[in-house]
Image 1 (spheres, rainbow, N blue to C red):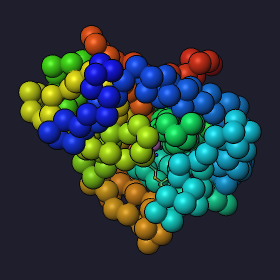
Image 2: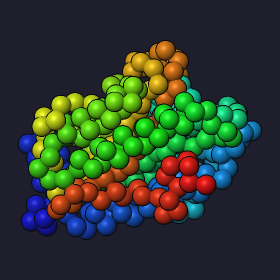
Image 3: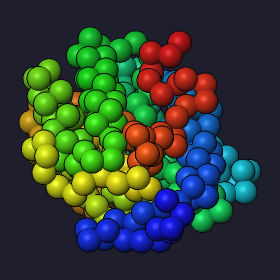
Image 4: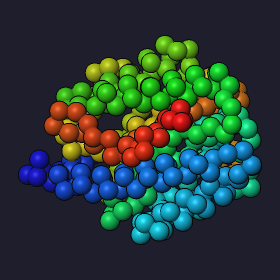
Amino acid sequence: MDDFRGRLTKDGIRIHNQEDFAGMHKAGALTARILDDIAAMIVPGVTTGAIDAEIERMVNDAGATSATIGYKGYQHASCISINHVVCHGIPGEKVVKSGDILNVDVTVIVDGWFGDSSRMYVAGPLSRKAERLIQVTHDALMKGIEAVKPGNTFGDIGHAIQSYAEGHRMSVVRDFCGHGLGQVFHAPPNVLHYGRAGTGPVLEEGMFFTIEPMVNLGRPETKVLADDWTAVTRDKSLSAQFEHSIGVTVDGFEIFTLSPAGKFHPTWG
Ligand code: MF3
Ligand code: CO
Ligand code: CO
């Protein structure tokens, strides 16, 4: 693999080497640890701004950099998306209520490498339908990850996610996708969370990208609010998302953003 250091495929996807995997492993580990450590503070009454401030403090304490502060004018260390917010919720004065479901998405830069991950959290007791949505979204991400190995295609990943979610009578958001990353935040390819098996670029050892499906209980359509960031479901149905940063290995994948404490799914406790 070292022979191909820095090579781009014909689709413009960078092929990384073993040293690059080590860089991603470190960035992913910090991302995951931050997402583990904020779990305890996500209780009814906390504001999304307080959660974000804690995330920013942890990034700085680790000697790392937030990738989102200053990104296209965004000013926060995380996106926090509650209930029918699909993604890119802006932290602020909003108070978390009992029964809310939240996605917290954190991207850090460690020694030039990007770690990008998000998970669902729940404040207080969970409705059955919210519990099902979170479980299906998590499992859809994992089905997508299981399709990652050299020789498979990006369409195989999208197909695995879409067929799983739709098989549970839920819908996959089309308006946002995963992305290549590495020493940049967003690089080719667009990683679609729907599609046909066998289509799209072929996966090769050394590719780094995120998979981050958003799944809705209702229809897939979204709209962006007047703040130019917050994306919501048009039909106000509940939405969930999980995201991992992944590398393609010789015979499969490495998940860079695995939870050290096993807290990736909110049923940990
Ligand atoms: N972390 C998000 C992603 O998964 C991107 C957030 S960009 C921001 O790609 F500016 F909204 F923070
Ligand atoms: Co991402
Ligand atoms: Co993200």
